[in-house]
Amino acid sequence: MAKKTSRKPAKKSARKTVAKPLAKSRKGKAAAVKGPAQRVKADTKAAAGAIPRWTPVEVEEAFRRFQAAEPEPKTELHYVNPFTLLVAVVLSAQATDAGVNKATPALFAAADTPEKMAALGEDTVRDLIKTIGLFRTKAKNVVALSQILVAEHGGAVPRSREALEALPGVGRKTANVVLNSAFGEHTIAVDTHIFRVGNRTGLAPGKTPLEVEEQLEKAIPAHYKRHAHHWLILHGRYTCIARKPLCEKCVIADLCKWPGKTTV
Ligand code: SF4
Image (cartoon, rainbow, N blue to C red; front, side):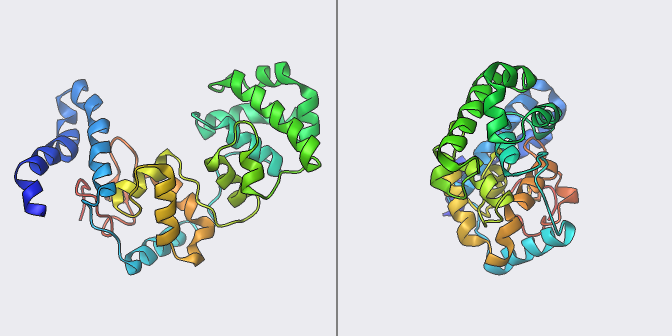
């Protein structure tokens, strides 16, 4: 089966998906622009079952190394309590943590509880977060969710996925981050980095973030689940980056199943 795909389609595919982006990056911008899209195709091969799966021993070893490198990983978003964490995560949608961290000190100085945020009002919140993308919608959501927390949860952030996902601007990923970072639950929030790492490495192939989350839930041993989310985000953000992964400095390079990796 492997030969079939490697004779014609897979060879073409390999050239398109793996060799080209790395080799052609010298040839100019056109190749560089095409690279990531092609690499996504290579990554999705894992979802289609083309990349070998990890054994439990390999998964254990990968997370042992992540833990050795960073025993207590934490979110890079700045926050002072569960409410400000929730707000910071809502603000981070389609924005960088660094960008959110620039705006939140002034916002949280003015309002670090749902009561204060609701009292601050949408216009002021909008003004305080105007450096963040989609700030109009986000300001509306932050004030609305604050009002709901006050009206329905006694001003506290609920420790319940359903209640969190019922808040404006809060989806499964945000709920998972809050449950994990604020309450210590073993949830895995699949963002763009984890989605890429899961598929590219073959650790957790899936066509949707939920599929990747479910695969990670199955694959990762319980004793690593508390921090798995942060280890994978950090790995995707700083090492297994989208355009040109830094395989030379990767601590799981020998375990990774991606055919395009630049080390063995
Ligand atoms: S070897 Fe390369 S592709 Fe594989 S996980 Fe490490 S950085 Fe990512």
